[in-house]
Image (cartoon, rainbow, N blue to C red; front, side, top):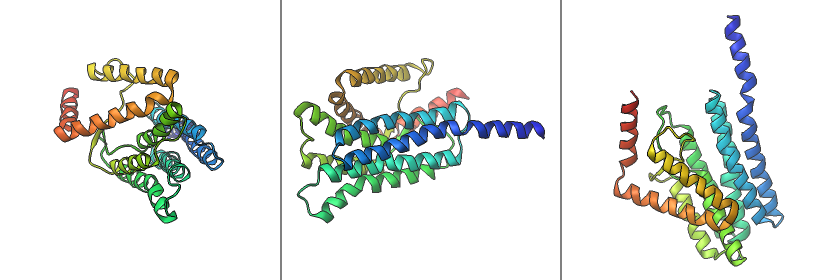
Length: 254
């Protein structure tokens, strides 16, 4: 009994570690909102991008340390609501709806927050314990990255925020994709022992990170557009492709 209590105590002491990354993600989302409200949307965009790093980190830490929990899942979703749902909505309202009627502008700006929250709620009630190589619907971080990436791309290339009409179309598409049945491949596992496809995706991820380091906003939006378009096309051509791959992989591991 003493040993069980000791192990439980150690687990509780370690459980705060992934949650620290979640808190950083939440704080960076809040900081991005304050920057937008103070007329600094470009800085806010990059702050949100750092938040993506902490969002990935908290999940990785929880799984590596065996500390996944219902609380951690819910806490992470609340942080994502701020960083990847509220931030894009505030950004769109501050930058792209000028000239529209107030109600219409607010309704369009509300879309990332509304559909992103719906997607997070659906994700949290998914009771399947079997890991899948895909996401159903576009994740909130990827949708937010695409919207922010559009702004950063235009700012670096043309020194403006981009055509508001095109921006609002992108906002609508990203929002609906979040609750769509489209399957998007997950990012690669950080291991060279997971097969050729995973290794190729690792190489692609490394190239993306290097390109982001040197070219910043010029690569983010084009790469996200390619990833999303390719995923939609592959899903339309073969809707069960990723499910079959998942089943084959599971059968081989038995």
